[in-house]
Image 1 (cartoon, rainbow, N blue to C red):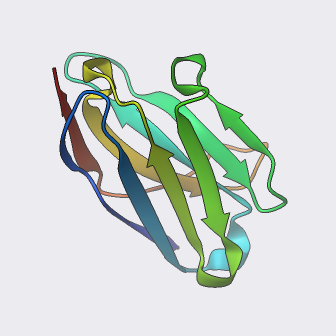
Image 2 (cartoon, helix red, strand yellow):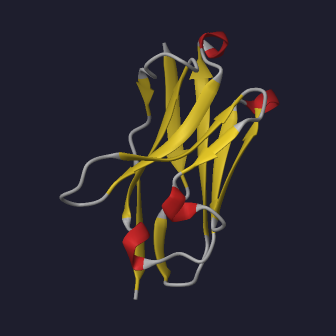
Length: 117
């Protein structure tokens, strides 16, 4: 099992920045990819950004150029730097982990990000 704990959410004005953190513990050897997902009220959960142990990243089109995902392999952590935030970025953000090419089974508890206009 892998445990994921997110932190760093909060309330910010449009145009502001936030940095989310996710710390992984447990059977770290069983995962080689981590990412951030979000779910806005009344909408389906969607992928925001992912990163593999080797550093390959993916981003949703809606966040490209504004969000940056990074990871610290030594400390089993992944981060999401969010700049130029928009009200439509308001959602609960979840950290997720697993092995690339297979369904990722591990989820964090989520952290709320609210962007006011």
